[in-house]
Length: 410
Image (cartoon, rainbow, N blue to C red; front, top):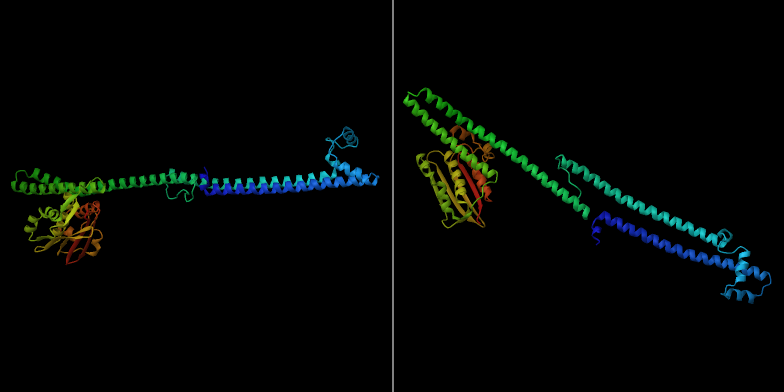
């Protein structure tokens, strides 16, 4: 019932009004007491005049005393008072003792009511002025919300229904701001993705067009046709690889991938990751070593996690010379599993190490070697982070690189 007192301004107004009314009531009681005392003094003064006049005229004290003790009103007495001008119609000005008392009481009551009205109006005016100030501020800020500016917030630090309403409006504005921000991010994401796809497909598509033209014009030259058909086939494979990688990264960035986690032996995850790379490693004269506790379990999506580890191994193969070693190892930690992919290859320069997880980024050595399309590490990081883990790297130029995956055990 008194919940409106939670609002500090309303509470102050209510208590202030109660204080004013209490003070006025006390003053009214004081005026009533003073007025009674004044009326008593006026009546005594009038009695003194009457007794003094009767005594001076020789009326006996017994008669005067009897007259004061008498409570009976007679027609003869009323008639006499009427003839000398004392009845209900007599002006108070002809009764000076009572006139002065009434005058003082009137002044007291006028001052009391004036003070009451001034206090109540001042308190009410102050309350509504403060509330109007807050409303004007709220109107200004909500107009900014309507214009897409969410930098300011509505006042909601106080309790009460009014401020709860402002808080709800502010919360709604925050939701709109978040939606706007997400919309901008989505537009930028789409713009960047389209730009990336367009840029990355331009080179292989141009190459395919060139190969097709050469094959068409030299159709009689079997050696030339075979050579550029092989080049076209390689370009098509690159386009397919690029498109598949782009689709995967885009789905991960957009949050469209649902990881189907199950408990897997990490040895099985690692075996899946390197199975298709062992032939390449052998052809390039490199070794892939897989080692770790066979009893370590991990709650993960087998396909995606295997691809993340595989991308790290591919990256190691790209930047490792013939005779190099790529080591895949793991260990169980409290609540986590750590997976390491290390190589003794070229290493990563300091200027590159802060950018290697960006899409399509390749180090200067990688560009010169023509390795990859620059999506493998970005894809691996998105997969690991999508499952609640982290992917970090440390490297020394000329000594090798080590990637560390930290994944939750459950």
